[in-house]
Image 1 (cartoon, helix red, strand yellow):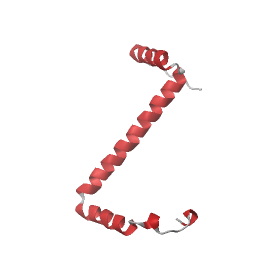
Image 2: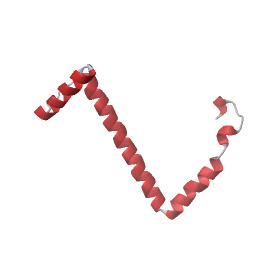
Image 3: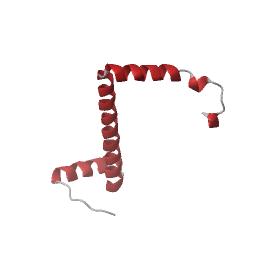
Image 4: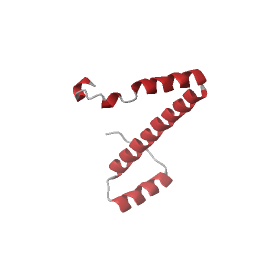
Length: 82
């Protein structure tokens, strides 16, 4: 188990969340870190997507690939062949 020092303001917030939720401080911090990690991943994905859309050639390639893949999940193949 690792330890980390947090500010007094963060300690107050953590105590308030713990009182409200009844969860452990460790669980609250873990959940908050997981949410932050997801937010960072989605932000990165959105930035890459926006960059792709700004490149006309790359965007056309993307749309072409989507068109080629359209309906592939409805090809009646067993799941293990997908």
